[in-house]
Amino acid sequence: MKATLERDWYRLTGTTLRGITEYQVKGEINENGYVKFKESFEGQELPDEWTGQILGNQLTITKPNGPAVWLAELKETSSVTSSPSEPPASKSSSGRLSTAKAQATLDRWIKTREGGTVVVIGVQETTQNQDQADIKVTNFQHKSWFGPRPFTGPGTATFKHYTDGRWVLTDVYFWQLDLLAHPNMTVE
Image (cartoon, rainbow, N blue to C red; front, side, top):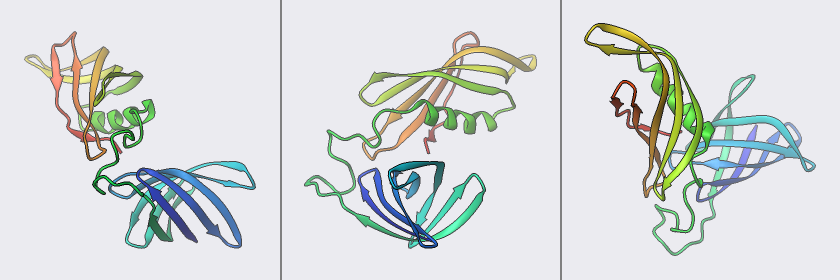
């Protein structure tokens, strides 16, 4: 299997070749080479979403039916006059923070805690470089003076957008507990 991909800042386009069938590709790529894309054939988008990472000339991908390694060719097609390491001011890395990306990051964070689940209710733009997610946790285990205690209730999560294109989960706050955590987790 082979992928011929073009990167224009954080947009990914190109083709994949599986057997004798060539598919069109549209998706995203970040500064670390992590990719997310969908294929289409004869104008029809296929249901599966592929995720993975490009390292050198290999694209290690994951699909619902398991991992695979493809030979990959990645071309940089950005034609801007600003610094090559950062996108022009009019283009953010991938636009605003999506609810799905906020949810995935908070899911990773909650796994580092003593237990519980978290649901993102929605994401709001608070400033140009910061978004805030309204969240609800269920059976979140927090440490108190009296030992671990479960908490179910609302909270907020703050994500900051840096000039290198990264979104980072910087704060998680539960006002009913007066509890503030600083995960500093990069959104993937």
